[in-house]
Image (cartoon, rainbow, N blue to C red; front, top):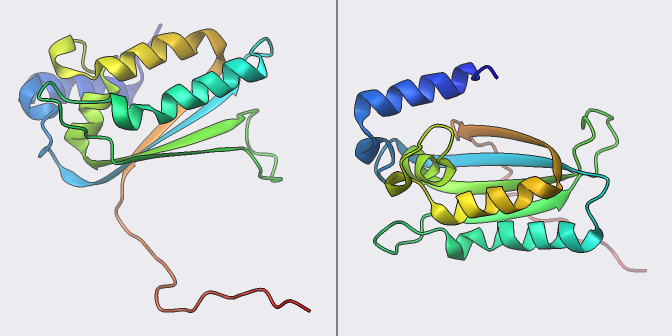
Length: 161
């Protein structure tokens, strides 16, 4: 199996810096989004899918650094609802938010960080559990570079008749 260029680059950076720095909470601070999208196996029951979702969401509480501090800021989820036809069969998405790339690096762990002293055991256990129910997983991470919003515009309210 070939290693993705992004994985190779991250592994090289981790080796250059050393894992303590690469996974430190203060490594490249800023809002980091970790998008994960699933396509379930046809054999995955509704109960199994619900358990995958519950366990993923619970990582907000379960994911901790060795000193006991939580580092996952939030996790959101939802089912695919677009009518654009560009979902590639993906069914559910999760958006995990971190305060730094270091927190994300500690959370993600394998295949970039393979030393268990420097990755989240709760996330690793989740990946092992969920793999039995998943046909495809897509992951896309980004550090928020810009935000545009309608701040200051009052929310519209529906009129009742």
